[in-house]
Image 1 (cartoon, rainbow, N blue to C red):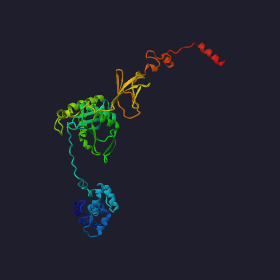
Image 2: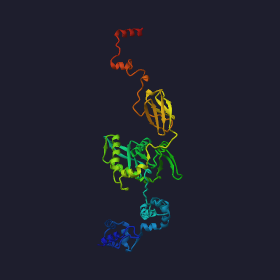
Image 3: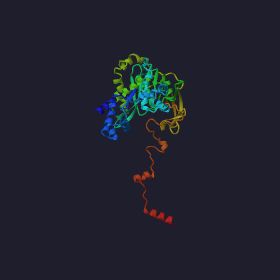
Length: 436
C-alpha cells in the first residue's frame, strides 16, 4: 500500500513545474521496510524501478522532501539573455540553445524550445491580407501549373499555361510539353484570341523566361528582351510580384488549382490536341458558367456586361518603326538571311528573289503566291529549322529527275539481280595475263 502511495505521489507532480519532488515519503518508507525484511538493495531497486544509489540513500536516511529545479527554473536564470537575443536570432530556438550552451546552460535544445514556445507567435505582428480587386479590363494574371495526365497509354507531365482576368475571373488554359519562352508567347496569343482582347496590365511571378534579374531595392528589372518586345508590341504593361509574395497573384493561383481539380480530375486523352480541345470547351461551358465564390456571379456574364468593352482589341497594336518590307535572295542552301538570322524555305526557291515582311513578332517570306511565316528571332546569328514538311532535295541538286534515277549504281544492280555475267574464258585470259 505504501509503495502504491509512493508511486501515486511521484506521478501526481507534473513534469516541468517549478518544484518537482525527487522521491515520495511512501517510497522511502517502502525502501526501509523491504531492507528490514532482508531484501537486497539490487532487488529493491528492480522491484521499485529505482536507481541503486537512491535505494542506498534512503535505506539509511530519514526521508525529507527534496526538490529539483524544473526546465523553466533552470532557464529563468537566462531570462534576460533570452528576451534580448531570441528576436535577434530570428526566433530560432536551435541557435538560441547553442548560444546558451556557450554561456553555461546544460539543458537540451528541446527544453529551450518548450521554454520559448509561444513567444515566436506572440512577437510576430498579425498581418492581414486584403484582396486586391481590379477594374474591368485592367489586369490579367498569368502562371504555369504542372500535373500528370494520361495521354493514350502514357502518363506524362503536362505544363498548363493559365491566364485569369482579374475583374470577371474568366479563365484560359492550354497544355504544353514545357514552359520555354516559345510556348509562353504562344499561350499569350491564344489567350488574347480566346478573350477577344487584352487587359492593360499583366501580372506575373518572377519566372526566368521573363526576368533575367531584378533588384527590388532599386526597382530595376532586366527583362528577357524577346518577351518584353512582344509585350510592348501588344501594348500591355508587365507587372511582377514581389519576391516571396506569390499570393499577390492569388486569382491565377486559385485558377491553376481549379483546373487541376475540376477540368482534369479522372480524365484521359487521345492526344495533346484532344487535351487542349477539352480545356477550351471546359473553360467556356464550365468555368465561365459557374457562380464564382468571390464575385457571386458567372464570369461570362460579368465579362459580357462590363469587361468586354474595356479590353484592348486583339488587332489593336501601337505603331512601330520596326515593321518594314525588304527583298532578299534565297541562298544556294535554301535559307533567307534577315538581321543575321537564317530562315529556311523550300529548295525550289533557291536563288529566287523573295519579299520579306518584317514585323516586331514575325518574319513573313513571300514567293509569288506562297507565304511562309516565322516567329521573329531576336537573338542574333541563329539558323532556324524547317517548321513544315521535310524539304525535298530538288532534282537539279540530285543530278537527274525523279523519272530518271541512277541506272548504274553497282549496289542497286546487285540487289536487282542485274549484275553482268562474264564467261569463264574471260577470267582464264585475265589470269594468264597476270601470271605472265
